[in-house]
Amino acid sequence: MLLTGVQAPVWAQSSADSAPLTVVVTTGMVADVARGVGGDLVSVTSLMNAGVDPHLYKLTRRDLSRLMSADLVLYSGLKLEGKMDAVIARLKKQNRPVVALAESISSDRLLTSGDYAGQYDPHIWMDVSRWRETIPAVSQALGRLLPEQADTFAANAERYADELQTLHQSAQQSLNSISVNNRVLVTAHDAFGYFGDAYDIEVIGVQGVSTESEAGLKRIETLVGLLVERQIPTVFVESSVSRRNVDALIAGAAAQGHDVSIGGSLFSDATGPADTWEATYRGMIEHNVNTIATALGGNPLADSLNPANNSSASNGLVMEVN
Image (cartoon, rainbow, N blue to C red; front, top):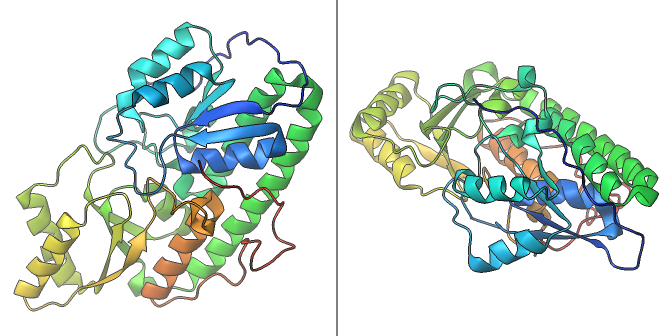
């Protein structure tokens, strides 16, 4: 049975000193929340960076060392990092500070997985309003470790939540500009279910929720028929997933006389390259919204949270992804 909430362990409280808390996270999306809430009181290390598929990721010895020495471990959860389950269980058994962000959200806000019965779709971050609901779990975890800074973490969390609310509303406005007939998003794997649910777009993935599930020939043939029948002109590749299946769709449609183009590359299970705005969660979402809206005939975001473009929109917490 999948847990949707984990009782907090009794953590040792850290005394205030000059050294920031060491926070080890799994993905860039989780890292952005940790930095947004923790600010300069935390040092965040992300195990998985640009182009890395968390469904398939295997921990290295260096990763294990980082996890064991961290003041706090944050991961997405809901089986996203499936190959890490044994290590996470070990950390919890040792009563170490470990928090699964997605599992802090109420189960009535989660979508079921099409791959595995009784499990939830882990791609929560694709809906900014849902991902925003993970912020309190991070603020509370940091506050338990550094109680004298709890008010600072709470203030950072409120500011970061306001940014995500602005981003969510801007994404809605942009995606609502796509005409009804064009509101179909075909991607390499089924990572955009929450995106479609939040922003009223039909989503079709070649592979399932997990990239461990292979798309068979029958699935490809079915989707080629769908593209041709509905005259869908655009499909999308993903930065962390092989484009092989998408290319097969394009070739299959072409063989039936229907031209399909690639609308762009989307960030699904990983953020963008280090030292770029797209390396942050906010930049990742802005890129996806702009790419999808433009390719499907809509309007891009009216404003960006990128501090390089709009100094008043950022809280100054954009940092390098390690």
